[in-house]
Image 1: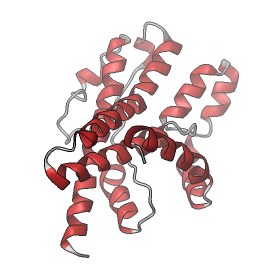
Image 2: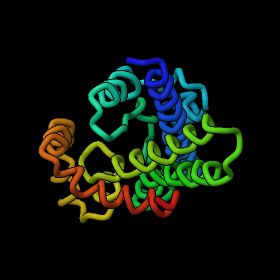
Image 3: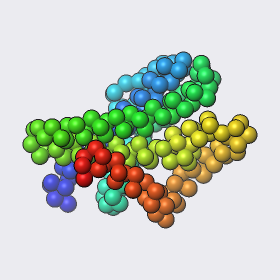
Length: 206
């Protein structure tokens, strides 16, 4: 692998790590705003990467996706601890806390797009900004997939009647296996890629 390729991979990994941390901090802060201090007390509302790093989701999986050139890049950090029974409104708390992570990534994508269009700092900043847009769009869309334990599943569960929500949550032990199957059969890409292209075009113009 050539040095430019290594530098590009390193750039994407740094952007991904930063974006995942913002995602988790957003969950913790939204929980705090809904009355739950669990994440704050656990020291998870911080930009320090060490409390957030998950060996598989933050390091191994992103590097594997980059090395195999799948065309998609995503990952996860250690889930921020949340106690929904502290929420002032259980259903609204579940929805807003779950949405906070993906929305933070979409906001980051918009910020990186703004930097991209400023066209300052030469090609290095341009590549950084482009990577920030791409990574954050994928992170937002990936986390909105309604398969437990992803954020999208918590939103769906909060909107379902209680009995249906309990049945739906029984999928959680099989969620990761189901996600892998959907990725390798192309189902996830079939639904997510058109949305990704639309958002990228909206933000970058191509």
